[in-house]
Length: 113
Image (cartoon, rainbow, N blue to C red; front, top):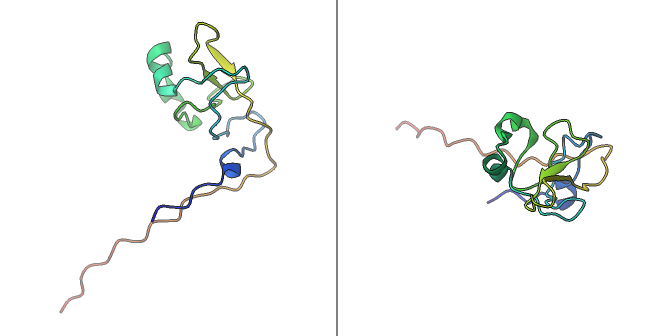
């Protein structure tokens, strides 16, 4: 069976005040712009997200891959604003980490007769 879903409160939890550990699912900016998927930003904006593999650049979620003052994203509405900060809330003192349960070990070799 699949692992249990991660509770929404745990998905949005982050502890660092620089937002670098934010891994939530916010995908709109403070001004209401829709975030551009990071992979598309690589194509459209000539940006290299592979250089920030540690930053969790998934889908079109707000992240802080490097020195900005906020969690942010490139916006779909480039003609209005190329990038914008996202309101992801405040850091928590501690976050529970929900890891999927380990896979069971593979079956052993068949018994000898």
